[in-house]
Length: 112
Length: 112
Image (cartoon, rainbow over all chains, first blue to last red; front, side):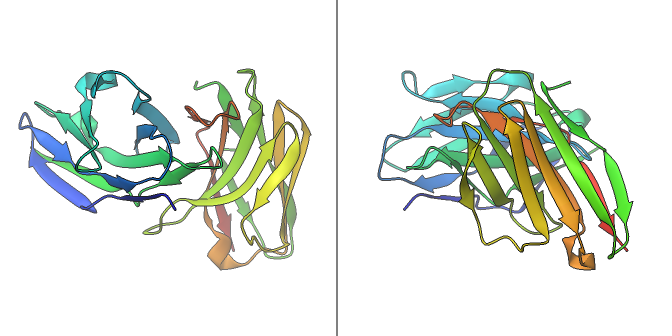
């Protein structure tokens, strides 16, 4: 069965510092991976996705993620965060029934 | 505007009321989803419709009743809800290959 683990429920980081949000998955089928962002009082928005090809995926708002098959990870990174990046970030993997399996989310807290 | 529109954005209802949440998409997607998002809990998939047929119902109480009259519209009918049903209800759509969901902004439901 597929599953997604987001290792940190909250990540505090200073403004303009780099950040990494961790995601590990388990999947017995072809791996399609996603990161979504949820700003306060809004729905989820797709940040980036890995379907195939290059393992380094670039997304919106300066975020990128690297697919690592041997470590079954898909960590999200940004070299310099801004106060506007304050949000909750969700990692997901496509399941065998084509529905998304979600992680529990990581709240990114930007400290001024 | 994400392409998936949910109405209303906010709803306060008493436990004896009947109300409906509406979701509309014109992205040409053929799968639609209802999710419940409660504070400090993971995203909960409630219902999945593919090609207007319900394909999943994750043990949701019968006081929640979905309806999908066509591929562009999805409703969630609510009756005799409980205070613990207060949450953000999110609608999403995708192609039935599950690659890339588009979410609405959600309906914030408060049951009093």
